Length: 85
Image 1 (spheres, rainbow, N blue to C red):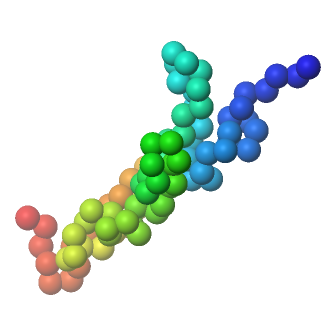
Image 2 (cartoon, one colour; image 1 turned 180 degrees about the vertical axis):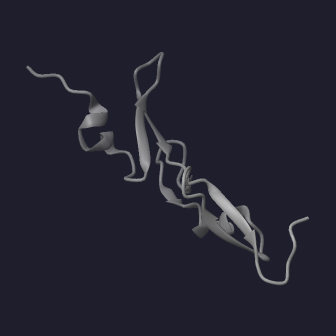
Image 3 (spheres, helix red, strand yellow; image 1 turned 135 degrees about the horizontal axis):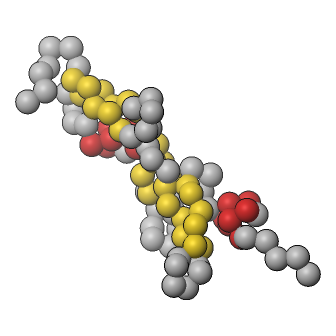
């Protein structure tokens, strides 16, 4: 019998935009959304959605949501005519 890490097989059923890992105590599969994605599902059913598509990434109506090129973290930029305060 060949035993393989469940995360190596189809990301253990985690969303394609999630990182699969194992709980240190129980070894249960843990799905965590990658940077730039927000869980719009539940604790048991992780659904990773583009953060800018969810409430404009928390940027507010007068800002544009984008991503930092290095970290992929949400980046808010004021729209023309607005100033960051």
